[in-house]
Image 1 (cartoon, rainbow, N blue to C red):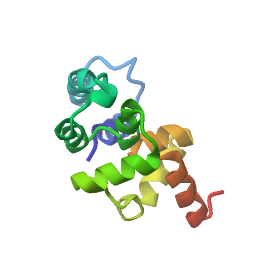
Image 2 (cartoon, rainbow, N blue to C red):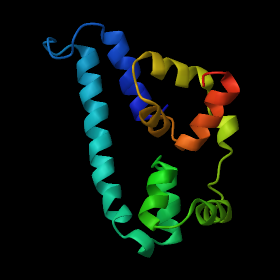
Image 3 (cartoon, helix red, strand yellow):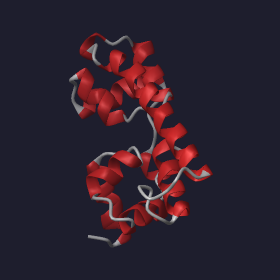
Amino acid sequence: MKKGMKLALLAEQHGESLADCKGCEICERMHFIANDAMSEAEKYQKILNKGDEMTLSEVKKLRERGINLNVIRQHLGITNHEFIKLTKALGIYKNLKVNTDPEIIKQLRLEGLGWKEIAEKVDISTQTLRLIRKREGWV
């Protein structure tokens, strides 16, 4: 499960306002996950900042570490079509329709997240999310 999803589930389990909490076990776990995610993001930001000078092994490493495909593509400065060809060549392309659970999307929407936030959280493009919404009758 992705860190963002873990945090969302822990926040749901917490129940009361996080600002009012004195530091329960759930809050401690949330802080640990958030801090871990921040240190990972900082580490991988250096690679992302290379832009079109990223090596293929760095692109693969970013994807294996869970960095959003659209984020990688944007930093590379290439088109979707070029990026699909690249990810297929690297063996990191995934069929998003198979790997995306509509129930997770529905739950995130009920929690008040916007469509763009949901797409980022479940690691899909907004276009793919639009297709899922249409398929599920949510449009």
